[in-house]
Image (cartoon, rainbow, N blue to C red):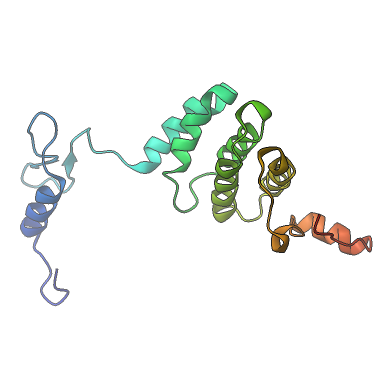
Length: 167
């Protein structure tokens, strides 16, 4: 599209319709609208990541360990700030249990959660639990990250004169 010569509504409809294609019944996903109607009609087969995320989170959260695969699938859809730390924390918590120990998945979930909610204390605690669980799986955190912790824990160490050790 050229900003100096923008597309007309008709041209936009053509380009959008071509990009969206047709649904499983062969009907265009962008439905023609009656003259004078300014809203587009879109096929029910067109979905968005956020709706899919909500569905997977609503299905997975109440199931505890049985729902962790739904939560992981939902978390892979996340970009931006669509949720609190609940999904990421639940995945991390489930994946550091001995029976389903998966340190890498827990680490990715915590990282995604902290990206979207950097002040989530519960995720910093989950990160610390994951680090404590790492030796059971053969993982060892790098020495450069062994001292990092939540802002509250770091402030407590400083206030109490405590030191961090890379153990």
